[in-house]
Length: 445
Image (cartoon, rainbow, N blue to C red):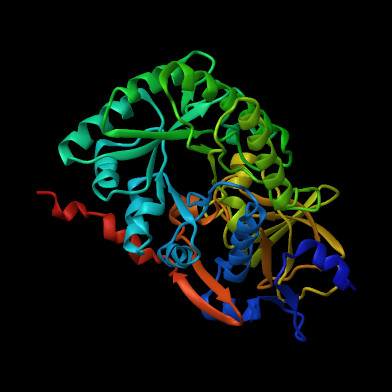
């Protein structure tokens, strides 16, 4: 049989197995969740999300100036999650008018919202400035002009950070590396774009430039990238202070803190990232005779990733002798495109038979009409049967938020669990929902 030590290597904290051999998440039986809400369903452990937030705050509490933990909501957003985060005293990173709208609808404090994005529209910027959100992270020269125009029109001022592409690359997948010079994001440091942006912004009274932002990538398991970008930016801040009276009040080092998807992943404890970041800021501020700036970070995946578990129902199976056994589930790339997009790897268990002997290596296939719709290529499970429930772990980031209706598959339900209770945060789409945006040719005269 699969012993407790073995399954705990797979499962996240707050998980267990009950007397019926069912996977339990923070006191809620996953089989009961499936019976109540169907599959596919994304389950979020809210207690674990709160624990992650507290751990980030605790990790930076010794810093001598202010710090902000801004949840990067592109990882996953919902009205209910924003309502929870508003009570957790974190800031919020939004990257679209849609995320901004939902955050405001949830009553999230405006002054704690930061607006990112490489192609913010005039309408999005007007909404952000008119709502007087806390900060806009400027990504390009076009944006400077739009913000100048809008602040005049609305007779207001706005705080901004400049997003820098510092030429520091993280050791991660090329699609989620963002700090290198050849990036769609930000002002390039090496070519002098950042300096030109500072000069232009300094000439505009209504734009209050409070600092710099850099994000070097995602799923990072080392600290050297953060240290390198801090050294670069603080060194440059000294030059710009002397040349343009630039004051570095805020240094935002982005997010990208890695999490565990499989046993091969070895993320650092959060306090190790924090210690390295704080130490680098202190050291380089001291060397360059600068006042310690505030430190802002933007964790997204590292707050919600491990808190999410996807539950699927097993359907058909196909065995190719001496090659592979395919086990299909009722979801796949439509609700989790990461394996197809990034070659992301996951693991899981049979949620209704957790502690049975693992005896068969299989590959988990999605139901979309694509050969690349594979959730897990190789996993050893108890011999799976039709209607078994497969739990896939660490799916809380970039699963639902990147979901689509490919093959006209409805998006899954999202259920929050906490202290033995469940809550339907997002209902399952139905095929009837497709008709809300459709027009029949009968209406075309």
